[in-house]
Length: 303
Length: 278
Image (cartoon, rainbow over all chains, first blue to last red; front, top):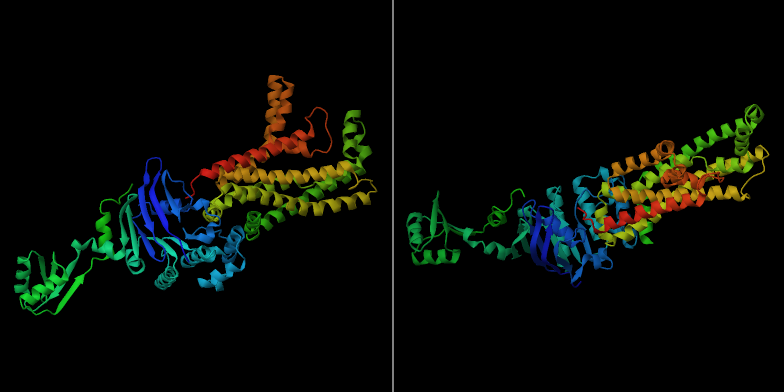
C-alpha cells in the first residue's frame, strides 16, 4: 500500500458572514492515525467536506497524492469516508444501502457482504435502517467507507453514539488499518479518545490551524503546564531547596509536592545533591484535554 | 450505465416503487371500468341520446363512438392519474437523496454530479415506461376483449390506435423526466411534491379557466392557442387522438413537453453542479 498523503494548503471557506475555514494548511501522512481536533464550530466538518469535493473552497486546495478528490478516477477505491451516521434511506435495509453504493461505484456486489461482516453487522443485514441503533449506523457507515478497500479513511466524529465496547472496537480497527499503511484521518472532540488513538494531531479553532505534529510533540510543546509529582518525608526542606533553584512548588498532604518549572531529571538530581529521600517521582503529563483547552482558549465561542 | 443501474437499485430497494406501481394499476383499473361503463351506455343508447340533438352535437357523439376512438380511449385509461404518479415518482427519485442525506454518499461516489442527474433522468424515464407497461398490460388487452365482444372492428392493426398508445408511453416518459428536473430544482421533498401536484392539477383546470377568461376579456382569439405552453395542456394536446379543428397541431404539444423536461433537467443539473452539499 503506497501513497495516500493528504495535503491541505491555504484552504479557505467563506460563507456569507462567516469564515468557516481560514487559510488552513496541514498534512496527513499515511500509515498513521491523525486526530483532527477542534471545538464545535471550528470548521472540522467543512474542511473534511471540502477535502471530499462536497463543498467548494473559496480559496486553497485539498489534495490526495496531488489530486483533487473530484479528479480521482474511482474515488471510492482511494478514499472511504464516514461523514454523518444518519445519511441513509430509512426504509432501505443495511445490506441494500451498501449494494446501492457497489452498483454506483462499479464494485462487485459481494463486497457488501464482506464489509458488513467486517463491522459485525451480518445478523442485521436485512433489517431496515430505521431499526438500527446509532452505534449500528456508525458501523454501517464504516462498512460503506471500506467498500472500495481505500488507502485513505476519513471519519467525522466516528465515536459518536458508540458504547465503550464499540469505541474499543473502532480503535482497534483503525489502528489495524493504519498499521497496514493506510492514511486515517479522524475528527473528534472526544479528546481522551484521541489520546489513545492518534499518532499525529491537527488542532484547529475558529477555522485556523492552532498546532499540528506528532501527539507527543504537541503535548511537549505545552510543557510549561506539566508538573512533576514528588513524595518525600523531607517535604519542607526539599520544597525550600527546589524553590531556590527557581521552581514553583505547591505542597500537598502526605509529603507530596507538585513542582513546576523543573523537569523530572532536574528534580531527581536536586534530590541526589541534597541527599533527599524520594518515595515517588513522576512527570504529570498534561492531558490532551488541558492542552487542547489551553490552545483553543478564547477561540471557540459562538461564531 | 452503472449509475443508471445504481438508481434503479435505489428505487427497487425501497417501498416506493411498488406503492407507485400499485396505485397506478388500481387507478388505471378504476378509470378503465368507468370508461367502459360510459362507452357501453353510449353504444347501447346511441339512438336515444342523439334524438332531438342538432346535427353538430350528434356528430360529436358519433365521433366518440368510432371503433378506433373507443380503442384509443379505453386503452389509455388511467392516464390522468398515471401521469401524476410518474411525475411524483420523478420528484421522489431526485428529492429522496436530499431528504435522507444520501446525496453526500452519492456525490462522493460520483463527483461528476451531472452524470448522477443524467442517470436519474434515465432511470426515471425507464420507470415511467414501466408504469405505462404495467397499466397498459391491463387496459389494452381488456380493451381488445371488449371490442371483440361488441364486434367492433378496431385494434392494434389500426394506425391511429397504435399512435394513441405510443403517445401515451411518450407522455409517461416525459412526465417522469419532468419530475426529476423539478425535484432537482426545488430539492425539498415536500415542497417539490406539493408544487408538482398543484401544477399538474391546476394546469388542467386552472389554466383552461384563465385562458378563456383572458380570451373573453381581451378578445384575442390567439390567446386560446397559448394554452399549449401549460405542461398539462400540452400533454393533453399531444395524446389527443384526433386533430381537433382550431387547436394547435399535436406535435407542438410533444415539443412543449419535451422542452419542459429538458429545461427543468438542465437548469436543475447546473444548480446542483456547484452547490455545496452539507
